[in-house]
Image (cartoon, rainbow, N blue to C red; front, side, top):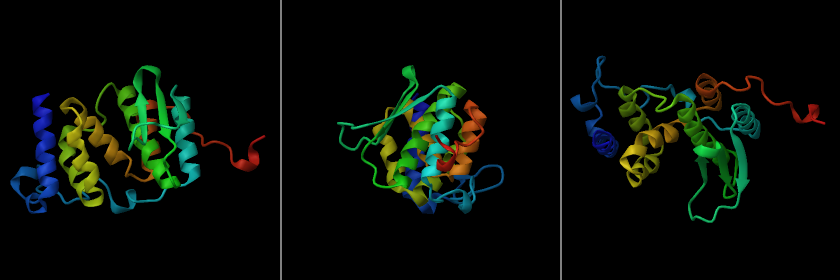
Amino acid sequence: MAARSLVIAALLLAASRPDLWGSSLWQGPAGAANAQSLVQQSEIRQLASWTDIDNLRVRLEASGARVVQRDCGSRGLQGLYHQPSATIVICRVHRDPQAVWNTLAHEATHRMQACAGGPITRSSHHPAMARTLAAWAPEELRSLMAYPPGQQVAELEARYTARLAPAKVLMLFQRYCGGAAVPPPSLSQRP
């Protein structure tokens, strides 16, 4: 556990110090990677639609998860995944589809981790994931230190995955949890 905490602390240091991004601290076999080493720019920052949200919800439910919306009393809470009941709660605090998507994709990542029995990424990818978060959402990376050391890698994966394009998240979900590969019917096809 202490080793993971040190890894996250080093990731936070690197995120706060772009001058270290090219240092030997982050060099892998191919040398230092830039902030987009794991994903192409086209895979991140793509806006999600209500259809994307519905597609992910259907896949979650097909995998045995329950997705509900509730008023959450905790200030700042946007959603949660309760693993024992396989329930994802989306709090009624979101103002647009992108905010709903970010929370749903984040919580769906925790479902993927449950399906996989642990992390869904290789530890060698974590530095590049942290650099990507530092570039696109530094507040997300900084907030990781509020979590116990044993939860920080899971949160890094969830925060990173929530920033991926909807098609990429759906592909990852299919890989780790299976579920429905067919999108829900369009509104014109519903009874």
